[in-house]
Length: 133
Image 1: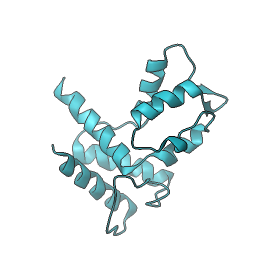
Image 2: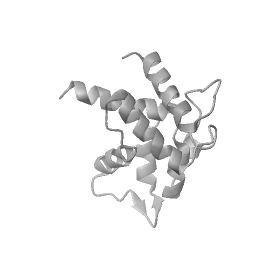
Image 3: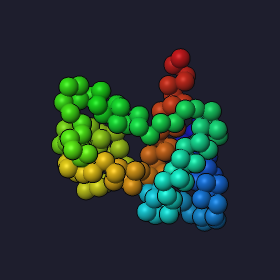
Image 4: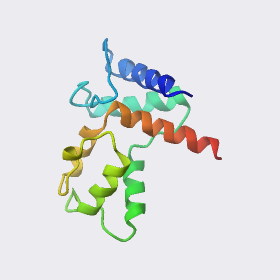
């Protein structure tokens, strides 16, 4: 699958989820703040991506990989990301500006950082992992 096909598929899922015409969706758009999705829309989008691309999409996979990279170092303390966690999350989310991921950030703010490109990367990662199975 090409990057363009992946982008178009993710955009179509977003349009169906939000049930509105979005003339232009950019890879840098934040699902919540820019496209005006909410937490229920977020869940619906995950479902649509799974159906469209025949993959299991788990946004928590980013956190799981971060904790795996950290080993015994805590990722979250008092519902906030540690400095070490932010370093790893920035590696996993190069599409998110550094100032949006910061040490001490509340875990509740994390979904607000996710962009169209993030969903493309999640789906792409899952499609790649299916090839190696």
